[in-house]
Every structure is written in C-alpha cells, then in structure tokens.
Amino acid sequence: LYFSAQEGMLFFYDIKGLQYEMKICADILQPISSLVFSPDYTTLLVVTDQGTIYTYKPAHSGEAVKLLDACSSCFLAADFLTPGDKYCVSVTISGEVQVWFLEDGTCLSKLNLDIEVQVN
Image (cartoon, rainbow, N blue to C red; front, side, top):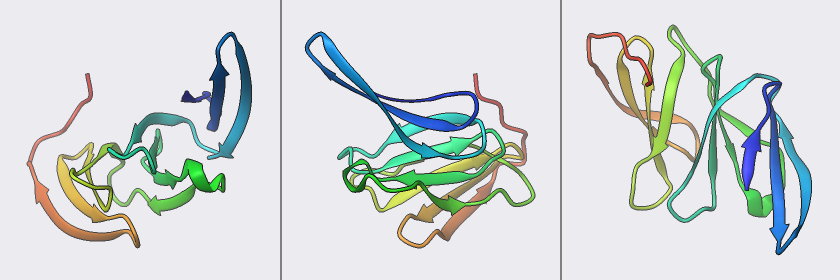
C-alpha cells in the first residue's frame, strides 16, 4: 500500500497477515495531490500540489525522479496511456491536455481545451 503525507513524503505499508511495516520511499518536498500506478505496477506517477510530476519505481527502491515541472500552468492530474507504461497524459488547470514520453519527459502532443479544468 503506497500513500503520501501532507508534507510530501511517499510511504509504503508492507502488509503480511496481521503484521505490517511502514517504510519511507521518497521525500518529494512538496505536498502530493495524487498517486497513479502504471497498468503493470512498475511505475508510480506522483503529482504534487505545485504541479510537478515525478516517477517512482518501487522495484528499484530509489528516489523519485522529477519528470515534468509546472510551466505556465500547474499540472492538475496525470495518468498512464495504456497499454504499457511508456506514455502518460496530463491536464493543466488552464485546460491544456498533453501526452508525454516517460523515458525522457518529451512532450509528444498537446491540445488546448480553452476552458479551465477542475477535479471533483
């Protein structure tokens, strides 16, 4: 079970029967707004309140890697494009939808919805 705390810490609960162990995975240094696993559960997208997107690979137990940084408008949400885990789609508060190549953070496509976006 992965979860985040208000101060930007990414935690993992290793649950085995009635026993559990909590581990700190990464310190993002910004409040985390959402966590999304890739379809094959190899990569976790971490979106912050400030609009930055990180990737975290649980099998590598390393640090979270900053993939995308907020430009003129904060990223509101992100998710993987399936099948696979090579691409993600993001939406900004200003209504810009973007498709990203996760390996190097290249923006492959974008579409402006010309409307402000909100998450409910």
